[in-house]
Image (tube, rainbow, N blue to C red):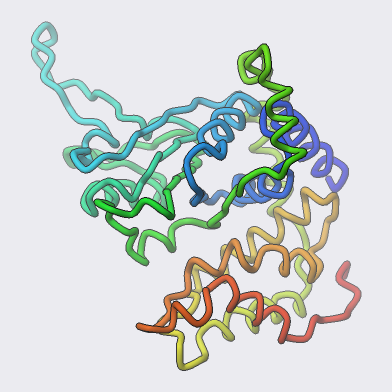
Amino acid sequence: MVADGRLFGGKITENIAKVIVGKEQTIRLLLTALLADGHVLLEDVPGTGKTKLAKTLAKTIQADYARIQFTPDLLPSDITGLNVFHRQQNAFVLRKGPVFTNILLADEINRATPRTQAGLLECMEERQVTIDGETYTPGCPFFVIATQNPVETAGTFPLPEAQLDRFMMKLSMGLPDREEELAILERYLDREPLADLTSVVTLEDLDKARTEAGCVYVHPCIREYMVELVAATRRGEDILMGVSPRGSLCLLRCAKAYAYLEGRGYVIPDDVRALAVPVLAHRIVMGFGAEGSVSTRELVEQIVASIPVPTEDFTK
Protein backbone atom coordinates (compact mmCIF):
# COMPACT_ATOMS: atom_id res chain seq x y z
CA MET A 1 0.00 0.00 0.00
CA VAL A 2 2.77 2.45 0.92
CA ALA A 3 4.66 1.93 -2.33
CA ASP A 4 1.40 2.31 -4.25
CA GLY A 5 0.88 5.77 -2.74
CA ARG A 6 4.30 7.05 -3.70
CA LEU A 7 3.96 5.57 -7.19
CA PHE A 8 0.44 6.96 -7.62
CA GLY A 9 1.41 10.48 -6.60
CA GLY A 10 4.66 10.36 -8.53
CA LYS A 11 2.99 9.41 -11.81
CA ILE A 12 0.42 12.19 -11.55
CA THR A 13 2.92 14.84 -10.43
CA GLU A 14 5.35 13.93 -13.20
CA ASN A 15 2.61 14.09 -15.83
CA ILE A 16 1.27 17.45 -14.63
CA ALA A 17 4.84 18.80 -14.55
CA LYS A 18 4.93 18.36 -18.35
CA VAL A 19 2.51 21.31 -18.53
CA ILE A 20 2.87 23.19 -15.22
CA VAL A 21 6.39 24.34 -14.41
CA GLY A 22 7.84 24.47 -10.89
CA LYS A 23 4.74 24.06 -8.71
CA GLU A 24 5.44 20.63 -7.21
CA GLN A 25 4.24 21.48 -3.69
CA THR A 26 1.02 23.04 -4.97
CA ILE A 27 0.38 19.94 -7.10
CA ARG A 28 1.06 17.68 -4.10
CA LEU A 29 -1.38 19.63 -1.95
CA LEU A 30 -3.98 19.53 -4.72
CA LEU A 31 -3.60 15.75 -4.94
CA THR A 32 -3.87 15.55 -1.16
CA ALA A 33 -7.24 17.32 -1.24
CA LEU A 34 -8.38 15.10 -4.12
CA LEU A 35 -7.49 11.92 -2.20
CA ALA A 36 -9.12 13.30 0.95
CA ASP A 37 -12.37 13.93 -0.97
CA GLY A 38 -12.31 17.69 -0.47
CA HIS A 39 -12.36 20.86 -2.57
CA VAL A 40 -9.74 23.55 -3.20
CA LEU A 41 -9.87 27.34 -3.45
CA LEU A 42 -7.06 28.78 -5.58
CA GLU A 43 -6.48 32.47 -4.89
CA ASP A 44 -4.05 34.17 -7.23
CA VAL A 45 -3.68 36.94 -9.78
CA PRO A 46 -4.72 36.15 -13.37
CA GLY A 47 -2.31 34.32 -15.64
CA THR A 48 -0.58 32.09 -13.10
CA GLY A 49 -1.95 28.82 -14.55
CA LYS A 50 -4.94 28.06 -12.31
CA THR A 51 -7.24 27.01 -15.17
CA LYS A 52 -4.49 25.08 -16.92
CA LEU A 53 -3.71 23.20 -13.69
CA ALA A 54 -7.33 22.07 -13.39
CA LYS A 55 -7.50 20.96 -17.05
CA THR A 56 -4.18 19.15 -16.77
CA LEU A 57 -5.28 17.27 -13.63
CA ALA A 58 -8.52 16.19 -15.30
CA LYS A 59 -6.68 14.90 -18.36
CA THR A 60 -4.08 13.15 -16.22
CA ILE A 61 -6.61 11.08 -14.26
CA GLN A 62 -8.94 10.51 -17.24
CA ALA A 63 -11.78 12.46 -15.62
CA ASP A 64 -14.64 14.51 -17.01
CA TYR A 65 -14.00 18.25 -16.79
CA ALA A 66 -16.30 21.28 -16.81
CA ARG A 67 -15.74 24.98 -16.29
CA ILE A 68 -18.09 27.71 -15.07
CA GLN A 69 -17.22 31.36 -15.58
CA PHE A 70 -18.87 33.06 -12.62
CA THR A 71 -20.46 36.44 -13.44
CA PRO A 72 -22.97 38.66 -11.61
CA ASP A 73 -25.83 37.51 -13.88
CA LEU A 74 -25.17 33.79 -13.37
CA LEU A 75 -28.15 31.88 -11.91
CA PRO A 76 -28.12 28.78 -9.67
CA SER A 77 -29.85 26.83 -12.45
CA ASP A 78 -26.91 27.65 -14.73
CA ILE A 79 -24.80 25.56 -12.35
CA THR A 80 -27.11 22.71 -11.40
CA GLY A 81 -29.28 22.46 -14.52
CA LEU A 82 -33.05 22.57 -14.91
CA ASN A 83 -36.03 20.71 -16.34
CA VAL A 84 -36.96 21.85 -19.84
CA PHE A 85 -40.20 20.96 -21.61
CA HIS A 86 -39.58 18.66 -24.60
CA ARG A 87 -42.35 19.11 -27.18
CA GLN A 88 -41.76 15.83 -29.02
CA GLN A 89 -41.84 13.81 -25.81
CA ASN A 90 -44.56 16.02 -24.27
CA ALA A 91 -42.68 15.93 -20.98
CA PHE A 92 -40.08 17.79 -18.97
CA VAL A 93 -36.52 16.59 -19.56
CA LEU A 94 -33.57 17.31 -17.29
CA ARG A 95 -30.90 19.44 -18.89
CA LYS A 96 -27.90 18.78 -16.67
CA GLY A 97 -25.67 21.62 -15.56
CA PRO A 98 -21.85 21.69 -15.32
CA VAL A 99 -21.87 20.13 -11.83
CA PHE A 100 -22.51 16.75 -13.43
CA THR A 101 -18.82 16.12 -13.95
CA ASN A 102 -15.74 14.90 -12.08
CA ILE A 103 -13.56 18.01 -11.91
CA LEU A 104 -15.36 21.35 -11.88
CA LEU A 105 -13.49 24.62 -12.28
CA ALA A 106 -15.46 27.47 -10.70
CA ASP A 107 -13.61 30.39 -12.26
CA GLU A 108 -13.69 33.69 -10.33
CA ILE A 109 -16.30 32.38 -7.93
CA ASN A 110 -16.47 35.67 -6.02
CA ARG A 111 -17.91 37.50 -9.04
CA ALA A 112 -21.27 35.72 -8.71
CA THR A 113 -24.03 36.78 -6.31
CA PRO A 114 -24.30 35.04 -2.91
CA ARG A 115 -27.44 33.23 -4.13
CA THR A 116 -25.51 31.65 -6.99
CA GLN A 117 -22.48 30.91 -4.80
CA ALA A 118 -24.82 29.07 -2.43
CA GLY A 119 -25.95 26.94 -5.37
CA LEU A 120 -22.64 25.12 -5.08
CA LEU A 121 -22.94 24.46 -1.33
CA GLU A 122 -25.19 21.41 -1.52
CA CYS A 123 -23.16 19.93 -4.37
CA MET A 124 -19.86 20.42 -2.54
CA GLU A 125 -20.88 19.26 0.92
CA GLU A 126 -23.63 16.72 0.32
CA ARG A 127 -22.48 15.45 -3.08
CA GLN A 128 -26.01 15.81 -4.39
CA VAL A 129 -28.06 18.15 -6.58
CA THR A 130 -31.74 18.94 -5.98
CA ILE A 131 -33.73 20.11 -9.02
CA ASP A 132 -37.50 20.60 -8.73
CA GLY A 133 -37.63 18.36 -5.67
CA GLU A 134 -35.68 15.52 -7.29
CA THR A 135 -32.24 14.61 -5.97
CA TYR A 136 -29.42 13.65 -8.33
CA THR A 137 -25.78 12.68 -7.85
CA PRO A 138 -23.10 14.76 -9.61
CA GLY A 139 -19.91 13.13 -10.81
CA CYS A 140 -18.11 10.51 -8.78
CA PRO A 141 -15.55 11.64 -7.81
CA PHE A 142 -16.66 15.27 -7.61
CA PHE A 143 -13.82 17.73 -7.09
CA VAL A 144 -14.33 21.51 -7.16
CA ILE A 145 -11.41 23.84 -7.88
CA ALA A 146 -12.60 27.41 -7.36
CA THR A 147 -10.50 30.45 -8.23
CA GLN A 148 -10.60 34.07 -7.20
CA ASN A 149 -8.50 37.16 -7.82
CA PRO A 150 -7.27 38.71 -4.54
CA VAL A 151 -6.39 42.06 -6.14
CA GLU A 152 -9.30 43.13 -8.36
CA THR A 153 -12.16 43.15 -5.85
CA ALA A 154 -14.41 45.86 -7.31
CA GLY A 155 -17.86 44.44 -8.03
CA THR A 156 -17.16 41.13 -6.29
CA PHE A 157 -19.05 39.31 -3.56
CA PRO A 158 -16.64 37.94 -0.92
CA LEU A 159 -17.27 34.32 -0.04
CA PRO A 160 -19.09 33.97 3.29
CA GLU A 161 -17.42 31.99 6.07
CA ALA A 162 -19.93 29.15 5.61
CA GLN A 163 -18.79 28.62 2.05
CA LEU A 164 -15.09 29.14 2.76
CA ASP A 165 -15.38 26.37 5.35
CA ARG A 166 -16.52 23.99 2.58
CA PHE A 167 -13.12 24.23 0.93
CA MET A 168 -10.67 21.74 2.35
CA MET A 169 -7.69 23.88 1.34
CA LYS A 170 -6.93 27.37 0.18
CA LEU A 171 -3.85 27.48 -2.06
CA SER A 172 -1.87 30.00 -4.06
CA MET A 173 0.32 29.09 -7.04
CA GLY A 174 2.38 32.26 -6.94
CA LEU A 175 4.43 33.83 -9.71
CA PRO A 176 7.35 31.87 -11.19
CA ASP A 177 10.95 32.83 -10.55
CA ARG A 178 13.35 33.71 -13.37
CA GLU A 179 14.41 30.13 -14.14
CA GLU A 180 10.85 28.83 -14.06
CA GLU A 181 9.63 31.57 -16.41
CA LEU A 182 12.43 30.81 -18.85
CA ALA A 183 11.42 27.14 -18.72
CA ILE A 184 7.80 28.13 -19.44
CA LEU A 185 8.82 30.12 -22.52
CA GLU A 186 10.97 27.24 -23.74
CA ARG A 187 8.21 24.67 -23.21
CA TYR A 188 5.55 26.72 -24.97
CA LEU A 189 7.84 28.01 -27.72
CA ASP A 190 6.42 25.95 -30.58
CA ARG A 191 3.74 23.71 -29.08
CA GLU A 192 0.98 23.36 -26.52
CA PRO A 193 2.03 20.66 -24.00
CA LEU A 194 -1.54 20.10 -22.81
CA ALA A 195 -2.63 18.99 -26.29
CA ASP A 196 -0.10 16.13 -26.24
CA LEU A 197 -0.80 15.06 -22.66
CA THR A 198 -2.09 11.53 -22.04
CA SER A 199 -3.75 9.97 -19.00
CA VAL A 200 -1.54 8.03 -16.60
CA VAL A 201 -4.15 6.82 -14.09
CA THR A 202 -7.87 6.05 -14.23
CA LEU A 203 -10.76 6.92 -11.95
CA GLU A 204 -10.65 3.32 -10.71
CA ASP A 205 -7.03 3.88 -9.66
CA LEU A 206 -8.10 7.05 -7.85
CA ASP A 207 -10.88 5.23 -6.02
CA LYS A 208 -8.43 2.55 -4.90
CA ALA A 209 -5.91 5.19 -3.77
CA ARG A 210 -8.60 6.96 -1.74
CA THR A 211 -9.46 3.72 0.03
CA GLU A 212 -5.81 3.00 0.81
CA ALA A 213 -5.18 6.57 2.01
CA GLY A 214 -8.12 6.23 4.38
CA CYS A 215 -6.39 3.27 6.03
CA VAL A 216 -3.26 5.25 6.98
CA TYR A 217 -2.59 4.99 10.72
CA VAL A 218 -2.79 8.10 12.92
CA HIS A 219 -1.17 7.73 16.35
CA PRO A 220 -3.19 9.10 19.33
CA CYS A 221 -0.48 11.65 20.10
CA ILE A 222 -0.74 12.96 16.52
CA ARG A 223 -4.48 13.36 16.99
CA GLU A 224 -3.85 15.22 20.24
CA TYR A 225 -1.35 17.43 18.40
CA MET A 226 -4.01 18.29 15.80
CA VAL A 227 -6.52 19.14 18.52
CA GLU A 228 -3.97 21.42 20.21
CA LEU A 229 -3.35 23.28 16.95
CA VAL A 230 -7.06 23.74 16.29
CA ALA A 231 -7.81 24.77 19.88
CA ALA A 232 -5.11 27.45 19.67
CA THR A 233 -6.94 29.06 16.73
CA ARG A 234 -9.92 29.67 19.02
CA ARG A 235 -7.94 31.62 21.60
CA GLY A 236 -6.76 35.20 21.43
CA GLU A 237 -8.41 38.58 21.73
CA ASP A 238 -7.97 39.34 18.02
CA ILE A 239 -9.68 36.11 16.90
CA LEU A 240 -13.38 36.43 16.21
CA MET A 241 -13.89 32.82 15.10
CA GLY A 242 -11.48 29.88 15.17
CA VAL A 243 -11.39 26.62 13.27
CA SER A 244 -14.53 24.48 13.50
CA PRO A 245 -14.66 20.69 14.04
CA ARG A 246 -15.06 20.37 10.28
CA GLY A 247 -11.59 21.91 10.01
CA SER A 248 -10.22 19.31 12.45
CA LEU A 249 -11.66 16.50 10.36
CA CYS A 250 -10.24 18.03 7.18
CA LEU A 251 -6.80 18.23 8.79
CA LEU A 252 -7.05 14.56 9.79
CA ARG A 253 -8.10 13.39 6.33
CA CYS A 254 -5.49 15.52 4.62
CA ALA A 255 -2.73 14.26 6.91
CA LYS A 256 -3.59 10.67 6.03
CA ALA A 257 -3.63 11.44 2.30
CA TYR A 258 -0.38 13.43 2.51
CA ALA A 259 1.38 10.58 4.34
CA TYR A 260 0.08 8.14 1.74
CA LEU A 261 1.52 10.23 -1.10
CA GLU A 262 4.83 10.33 0.80
CA GLY A 263 4.86 6.52 0.77
CA ARG A 264 4.13 5.99 4.45
CA GLY A 265 1.43 3.99 6.17
CA TYR A 266 1.40 6.33 9.17
CA VAL A 267 1.21 10.09 9.83
CA ILE A 268 4.10 12.04 11.35
CA PRO A 269 4.07 15.60 12.82
CA ASP A 270 5.76 17.02 9.71
CA ASP A 271 2.67 16.04 7.68
CA VAL A 272 0.46 18.05 10.01
CA ARG A 273 2.84 21.01 10.02
CA ALA A 274 2.96 21.07 6.21
CA LEU A 275 -0.84 21.12 6.01
CA ALA A 276 -1.67 23.50 8.86
CA VAL A 277 -1.65 26.74 6.84
CA PRO A 278 -3.51 25.55 3.69
CA VAL A 279 -6.13 23.66 5.72
CA LEU A 280 -6.67 25.96 8.72
CA ALA A 281 -5.79 29.57 7.85
CA HIS A 282 -8.81 30.38 5.66
CA ARG A 283 -11.20 29.15 8.37
CA ILE A 284 -10.11 31.78 10.92
CA VAL A 285 -11.95 35.09 11.17
CA MET A 286 -10.04 37.96 12.73
CA GLY A 287 -11.76 40.70 14.71
CA PHE A 288 -12.43 44.12 13.23
CA GLY A 289 -9.21 46.07 12.93
CA ALA A 290 -7.02 43.04 13.61
CA GLU A 291 -6.38 42.09 9.96
CA GLY A 292 -3.68 44.72 9.57
CA SER A 293 -1.59 43.49 12.49
CA VAL A 294 -1.28 39.82 11.54
CA SER A 295 -2.74 37.68 8.75
CA THR A 296 -4.44 34.36 9.43
CA ARG A 297 -1.56 32.65 7.64
CA GLU A 298 0.98 34.24 9.95
CA LEU A 299 -1.21 33.39 12.93
CA VAL A 300 -1.25 29.68 12.03
CA GLU A 301 2.50 29.74 11.45
CA GLN A 302 2.97 31.24 14.92
CA ILE A 303 0.72 28.60 16.45
CA VAL A 304 2.62 25.77 14.72
CA ALA A 305 5.93 27.21 15.95
CA SER A 306 4.70 27.57 19.53
CA ILE A 307 3.13 24.15 20.17
CA PRO A 308 5.56 21.34 21.09
CA VAL A 309 5.89 18.57 18.51
CA PRO A 310 5.20 15.05 19.81
CA THR A 311 8.06 12.55 19.72
CA GLU A 312 6.80 8.97 19.71
CA ASP A 313 6.96 5.81 17.66
CA PHE A 314 4.22 6.85 15.22
CA THR A 315 4.03 3.46 13.53
CA LYS A 316 2.07 1.75 16.32
